[in-house]
Amino acid sequence: MAQYDIYPNPGSRRADIPFLVAIQNDHISSRTGATVVIPLRAGLPPVEIMAPQVEVPRHGHFILSTDEIFTIDNHRLRHAVGSLNLTDRAKIRPAIDKLIGEY
Image (cartoon, rainbow, N blue to C red):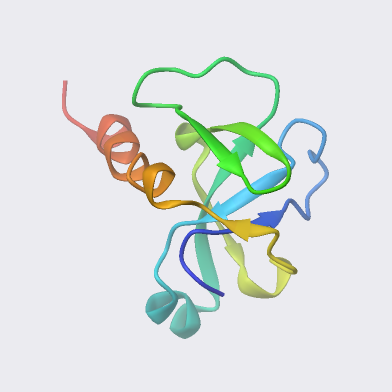
């Protein structure tokens, strides 16, 4: 499993959250058995920095729902549909910084 790979959501909320993007590096996830992911939501407008739009190859555009970040067991993530491009990868750190930043 590679960092920035995109997987179909194995959970029950596939209609709203069709994909999950793995953001944790595989060095850590291979040791813990779990991966930090950010849901990719369908049908929502983007929010500057916090919830930007990203592209899932061959599937279109989705919203990076950073405020719903969670971990999932590695064995539940199967059959990556692609990987985030460099431009979309660069949107993750500012989104996380916005989520956990002090105000």
